[in-house]
Image: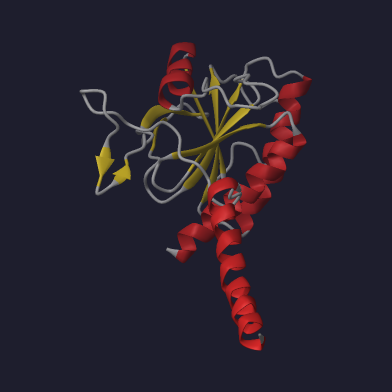
Length: 214
């Protein structure tokens, strides 16, 4: 009888952890595993694969101008982690909230030196007095171009019109894109929602940890 009890306890000790692991693996959400956006497809419409892994879209280089008018090429695949937002010409209260949240995020560059902030805007007319002081600096780059150029980068290159499930808004003016060090898009965020800023800051740290671990 005692042996049966010991056997039963042993089985429970081995089986329960295994069942918990399987449950978490199948049904729980891993909040530390950031998704990849925009899988690539072959000419025949099949999912593109490389050594058994799905191939995801990589953001190509973009050619715009710095605020001093000089041409500039931004390369997204050179080891930088980049967050990108669109700045409308008429920056209203909600736009200023977004810039304030990006200023919060800019503090992470002190501990994550390969983090770059990038703001895209059309027909730059000079820095507004209400803009953050750290904007248009080494870690917070501002690139400008014509309306057509900026629209092309935002919509075609960065795919900022991507609909994000459960997002409170998908407005271009409040959306921010997170691009990893390989140039792959890892998240879209609504910075008019303060909780989204906190989530973005946490996920930047996750990507930084992944890079250091690898």
